[in-house]
Image 1 (spheres, rainbow, N blue to C red):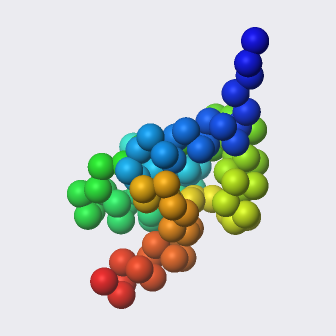
Image 2: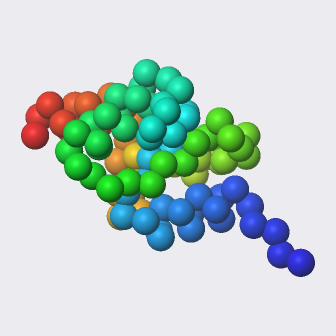
Length: 96
């Protein structure tokens, strides 16, 4: 029997989808201001994205931090590449 680790699940999710947001809550019901801000930017820009609620799975919540070597949530991935968190996404949006 094979078991899928959190790292495997994360890798599969970010490679199978063009845009993935690991966030607290969901895109329709964010549960922190930072997650809400990034989801709001993506929604405003009309970006189709997959949301992963890290509050639903402690292994994913810690696993995504280890996967990216980035300590905070939310985390945005585009085409399998880590873009950043709330501050970076906000800065990129403001700078065009």
